[in-house]
Length: 167
Length: 105
Image (cartoon, rainbow over all chains, first blue to last red; front, side):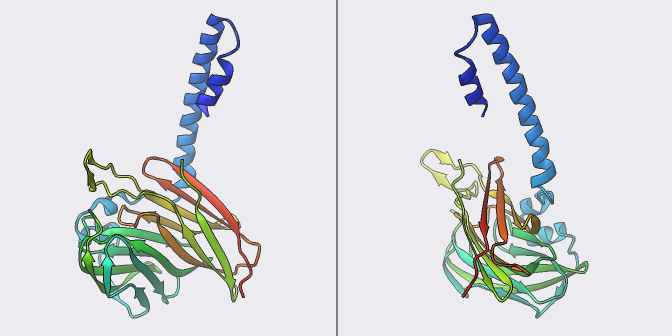
């Protein structure tokens, strides 16, 4: 955007005028970028990215970052993932929760360098179902943590990885 | 810049089955090439909206596969409803695409 403006203006005007205009444009471009930055923090980040969680190296730290210090084992959570994944770079994982008022679903691959892979906030219009594909470094438990009515429920499934997908 | 997403939204018994395929390298920051470590570059946030209302707000780490896939289901959808998807990566790149829900068989 800024490049385009500068190019169109640079053919016009005398030298000092050109410089003035350039500086003015630079300033306004800066202001524009700042405004975009503000918008980004306000609009796109509906929920702030869970930096602590995504950067923690132990599954238990990742779990605590979600506020889930105590977990309830639940049979109402279904993890659909292969028993053996030949390629750790693409492990399809789908999670369905039958717990009423499911608010969020998080996926933790316990032995990954950064175990927390994803967390999904689900609004009223969405079904408690998500499906995605993970990278997994080695054979590990995949844990789903479901938040419903302020409580945390969990289920695990072991996925054996033949070739790791983190290299 | 970011390449377009492929989005398919099909109606099944009042529930829209949405499948999204994004184009993104999803670099973990640990992969090495001859010229050194490839810097970390991944989608951090994906927001799915149904007729302008957020239904899914996803936060991702670099553990999501390259060219990410996301599947979800939206209740109370009708044919022609707008589904829009926006992702943002750790470098601030963004991409937004929209489709209409198609009537399923």
